[in-house]
Length: 305
Image 1 (cartoon, rainbow, N blue to C red):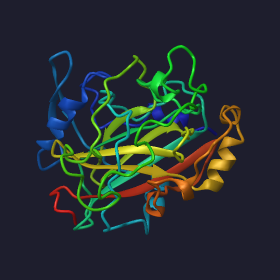
Image 2 (cartoon, rainbow, N blue to C red; image 1 turned 90 degrees about the horizontal axis):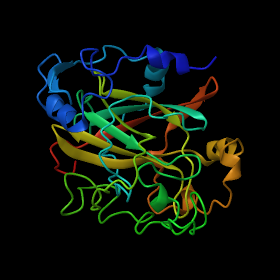
Image 3 (cartoon, rainbow, N blue to C red; image 1 turned 90 degrees about the vertical axis):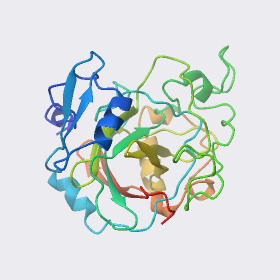
Image 4 (cartoon, rainbow, N blue to C red; image 1 turned 30 degrees about the vertical axis):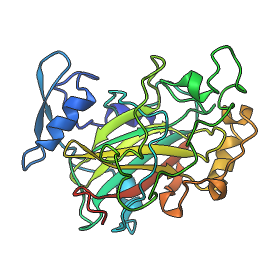
């Protein structure tokens, strides 16, 4: 049976006092940086009203079990944020927007790299391409950058500059010099279209965990399959990294539609300039899709430990 019906029952870290989409990312970051001892905070909605941001109390057992033995006190590698990041202003757990693909339920746990303790009230953003290799807000650019139809079609064309090259001193260590907290040294994109699919943010619960429902990412030239993640702690970009999948699973997913129609993949994990084994999701089957978990160890005090 599909897990989709669970989405209606999952409670976002925003309470029902705020309407869907009424709290922007900026307000959420500010609220979470000023949360009280119980994890609750107040945020201003886009309508000017005030809403309570309150932690979700529990994590589903299937997710909690997968995290057993997955703790890490090793600082997660910093990577480039890539050329397609921007604040999508989407605080939500289901980021699909009807985009076709194999369902992926994703759980991310954020820990302090020095203490191994969970970091509650951290904001985790994720974004990735669709089954054809396109990014929302940048469909023309990610499709080859040729509005007139050139560039090899969806997901084809020339890889964006720096897409497969790690930033200076990354992965690992302190953020590159001049980066805004942690962004890999690349500036934020000005959105090129109005689409916002496969982008979203959530706030970690008391166990440091956020959950998303998305699809298995596709691929584009010059990069292996990946999901971007950015962790904000106390209103600062603390960690920018990427999550990846085992190639056996990529092969199985890409044999299915709509992925099967996108052929010519040229970069795999072992040939990707950013890939590290520690970036691999721990993945199990989940009804008609997959469930993937990963622990990200962030460095809120930015001392490189």
